Length: 104
Image (tube, rainbow, N blue to C red; front, side, top):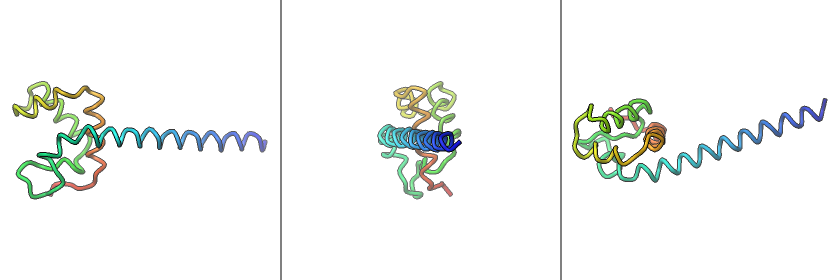
């Protein structure tokens, strides 16, 4: 019985470590993928262009998809969003949603 408990604890620890490693890798990817966005969508709340920091992940992702498909019209955003694949857009959306500064 003790052997089973030890195995269970080891399994839980390994799953937790792997989940953290996946999150850390994704966060670093999000940070690097989002660098082009910072020129216009920085952290300041005083910008005429809205900050993406703290917005909902689905909102950011869906907006980027709408720029890609032409449902939202903005020449530069269409070019930029078409430079990313679906996985990259999801990573960027997750990254900004976790940043915690919301537009008010």
